[in-house]
Length: 449
Image (cartoon, rainbow, N blue to C red; front, side, top):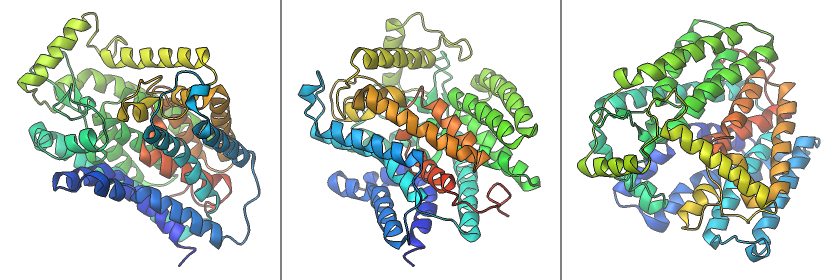
């Protein structure tokens, strides 16, 4: 049983992380809050740690060291060093102890997941279960998400445990948007009477849902078999479109190009072109065909005030001057400048969501790379990027699908905190660890049926 636990844990993470936020929000709604809910929410960390320890104890011998392993350990050492060094020595870092702990967890979970994968060799039976879990997650989150945006009123979610889970439990202040709901649940079309719901599904996030669907879609296209792949892929692609996440549309096209090169197939290249064309048309048509909702009066007042403060913002999502695109570019530009001007870093907990949750100044946000640069300086950032590319080099020889998914997520990381998406940090990094060491079955690029 001990040697099976890590493999079972990987399947549980694939499925469990897809419903984590929804379950936690429902628990908050029925009164499970504070430290009790924090303890329950830590199930994924406990499971990962237990699986890693069991895999280590069950291993007859450690895998041969790869460059990616050494760079992962170097990056880990730098994160721990920046956790220990007093932030006053670095300059203006003011993170709280809680913020530092949250940042350490954020920065090191991908490493732990990667090393769990390095210790695993998947049997064909285990791989089939993993494959079916991946496909099942894609179908389920799409079906749930589409039913939600068309059948469940937004007011139901305003009155649910979601605002409390995000706001009171996690400390993420969404009070200036949709009555405590994440603002990206709705596409602001510029028409006060016609805001459009975006598919967030059980992840409670259009972005997280989109990134997971990109990974699964690349998995499906990498299969060399039959009709059911096209059927499932069509369902998952519909889910991706309804998330209205433009970065994910571009990342999917990039991943398909990488897949075409890795497999020496023309089909993924043709799908990349087709996907871009469909995405552009869909983004243009979404305000007309998407699921319409409505704002409350207080939300309208906030939106009108924001419009007065930003009168030059374009509402056309294809023009490049809309509020979302403008915000992403501004945050990326400011983050790069911060890292360049302060190359020693500020210490853990001064960037991104972890700074926001603990009420300190956010030195850089959204981009994975600028956040790592703020937390661990340029040296830590270089070690992190070197590790990611060393993993890619290893994956290129082992798995076309994971190579494509890895490149897609690296690209998304430029404009968003992709390792802050739990499913990506735990599942993709663990699977990369498995693949880079040759732990996938020989037919892993074939159909799981």
